[in-house]
Amino acid sequence: MIRARNLTCGYGGRAVLRGVDLTLAPGEFAALLGPNGSGKTTLLLALAGLLRPMEGRVELAGRDIARLPARARARLVSCVPQGAAPPPGYSVRELVRMGRFARSGFWGGGGREDEEACETALTEAGCLDLAERQAAELSGGEFQRVLLARALCQGRELLLLDEATSALDLARRVEAFDLLAAQNRKGGAVLTAVHDLNLAALYCPRLIFLKRGRVALDGPTRDIFTETNLRDIYETDIRVAPHPVTGAPQAHLVPGAGAAAFFPG
Image (cartoon, rainbow, N blue to C red; front, side, top):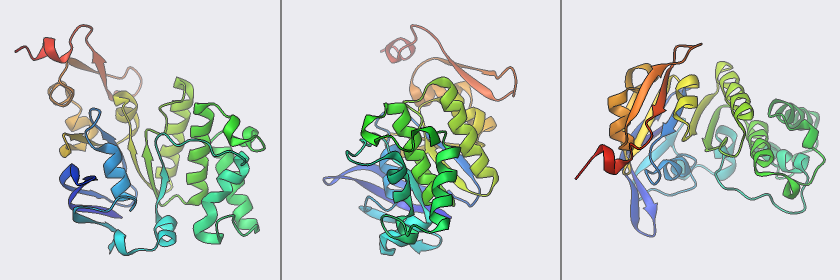
């Protein structure tokens, strides 16, 4: 589906990612994790074709993503960015319909397929009741749900999400990950950057940890979600125990075990 080969990229000539090799196959559901500044957002921007590599390349469906026109990329990849601001003057429905630009033009063609895609996305993302409201009037959590709806309206073959649930309350986070899991079961590939270790371990069969701009760990959740690995990645004391219902590994922080205490000297 999508592959990074020896990817080095950054901003203003300064590399943030260095020599990253990564492949996401069709139908995979993976979480991208790591400390602040490790390169998660930069990697997602490069995978989406929005940040040109300094070295290496990104391939989408076997083609160099840098050579694909924007609309061709958008037919294959849908993104939910981090920190996007609601644009003034647009209703939620209009904003979600913009996801159809790759197939029907910027505003959508107004056909039945576009209308159905918009309604389905609004319903699945839990924001049909917001459809006629102005996007600029929404709370941060409401707007994140709208961005997810727009991505679903655009396409579901590959979803790239950057902290798409950070502003949601606990119940809405679970609903959002339930939705992503459902899209994955239908065959869509999902790569989501997330800081919530436990949500990632509950839902994602594969975890990819970045640290200092490189892939530090990549593998099945049950194999790499260990106390030793998490301590090394986050440089603090973390304990792992099974979830009481699913048995998935869950992380537990230890109060007072900051980096200075855990790694003295």
